[in-house]
Length: 208
Image (tube, rainbow, N blue to C red):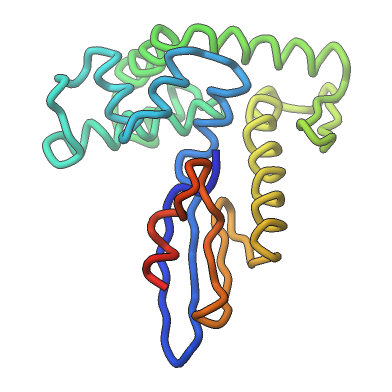
């Protein structure tokens, strides 16, 4: 799973490339939890609409253009679940009744039961051992004051940071911003990190 979209600007022999790691947190959650439905949806061209379709909230023919509001709603649910949002928090975020927010969260639990079993396992492990670690050893010390939401969010955020560092090393130390890479160089020397299939991210190399 490598940076999946990008854009580039060039002029006067210099170029600026900006690469975004799309759907990174969702992909990490799918990989760590090994939830088969989540992994399948991650590979979809639009995972947020794919989730809505799996939940029975959107027809199979739905697109970003035909159902923009529904897609945005399921996108918010997908991302907010990662940091343990409550029904009250989701209701406020989406400006909907709490009962409707509870329904949306129940749809997520129904569609991705393996993920939710993994979340419970992460919380149990962290509280029992007093620490939780990323794949490369970044630690979060867990005390009685540590919120479950912080623990739940840690695997995706910490491992996402590890992945971004690896990508930055591969791309000769660009600037980083959340899940983006930014690099300036001469037009002839700048190349974007290659995807697993050998192509360049988002056609960025072609733009240069």
